Every structure is written in structure tokens, then in C-alpha cells.
Image 1 (cartoon, helix red, strand yellow):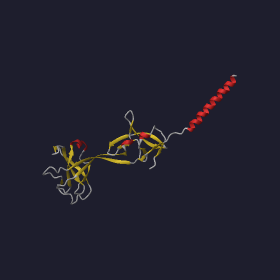
Image 2 (cartoon, one colour):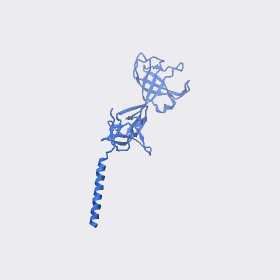
Image 3 (cartoon, one colour):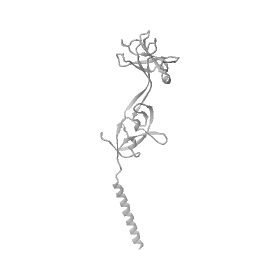
Image 4 (cartoon, one colour):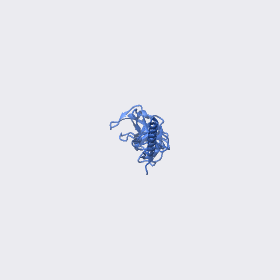
Amino acid sequence: MALKKYIWLFSLTTILSLSLIFGLRGVREPVVTVSVQALEKQTVTGVVSCTGRVEEAGREVLAASTGGTVQVRAAVPENRLRSVAVGQRVTVSGTAFSAERYGGTVLSIADKAYTTPTGATVLDAIVALDATDTSLKCGLTAKVDICVSEQVGIVIPYSSLCADEDGGEYVYVVKDGRAVRRDVTVGEELRDGVLVTAGVAAGEQLILQPEDVPCDGARIQEAAE
């Protein structure tokens, strides 16, 4: 009797185990469809934009120095002054100039600030241009973009950046058909995205809708274009 009971229990256990195994084999892992973007390395330049003070009578915005080098007098806003330094590279443009833009260098920054008629507090910066032509006339207005920083990284959309409970930031990339979490270091915030300086590499595929990824390691497929 005991032997029959043992055989019955063994048979039942075997049937249940086989049913479980084959049942699990029949369950397919869900696949999430996502849009992706190939990552590219970029150089992002931080710029302080200044304008000539044409509203102040008697002051020349653009003037030729005695050495023949064309100089631009630009007004640096006080809240950006700490970013500006002598020797920084500059791009100068103007509606009346024959070239789209001219390169230059910051020569000096005034020691004393003043207030413009619009109420802004500024300091003058003198910029020497690398090249000149006949379109550069004294008194013309100019836009001066001063390069104050330069970072190399990968720009990603804001929507693809996630944050965990500890404040860490991460993204999902595609690897072997799965979504893989990558912790990232972010740099400068831009108009169209944020600069990532570490954590991902050029050539990887970034998942653009991380909210659609159920978990790290989820199976994914790329959406048709």
C-alpha cells in the first residue's frame, strides 16, 4: 500500500513539473517597440553674446585702431562678466558686413561698469578682429559672441533622460535586442537637449521613449521609420 502511494505521489509530482516546464516555455517574453537615435560626439561651445552700444551718442561701436587692426567695442552684461576673459576667441557679425562673420580675440575689459539707457549694467570689452575689409565702417553695430567654454560630449533630447530616486541620471540604450540602463554624467543644458559627457558612446542607439521601457533588460524592437 505504501509503495502504491509513493508511486502515485511520484507520478503526480512528475506530471506537475512537466506541465510547469512546458507551460513556461509556451509563455513568450513581451517585446516593446521603441524609437531610437544613433549617438554622435559633438563639441558644444558656451557663448556670451554682446551688442554694440549704438544708443550712446558719441561712442563708436566699431573703430579702427592706430595699428590698422579693426576693433569692436562691445558691452558685456554684468551677470556674464565672470565668464569673460582676455584672450578668449570671438565671432563678430553685423547686417552691414560683407562677410557672414569675422573671428577675433578679446583684447581688454574695462575696469569700470556703467548703466545703459535701458537700465542694464555693463562693462566694455575691446575685441580685435583677425581680418578686415572695406565693409567694416566706424559706427556700425555689431554682434559679438564670446566663446567662454567648450565641452565635448553627446547631445541627447531632454525626454530621453531619466532620474532615479537617489537623483542619479540615466538613459536606456539598445544592446543585443534589449534595453540596457546606462548611468550618465550631464554637462551643459542646451536649447534642444542636454550634453552628456560620460556614460554613453558615439555609435550607440539611444531609446527616445524611456517611459515605454518596463525594466532594465527588457526585450525591445526598433519602430519602423
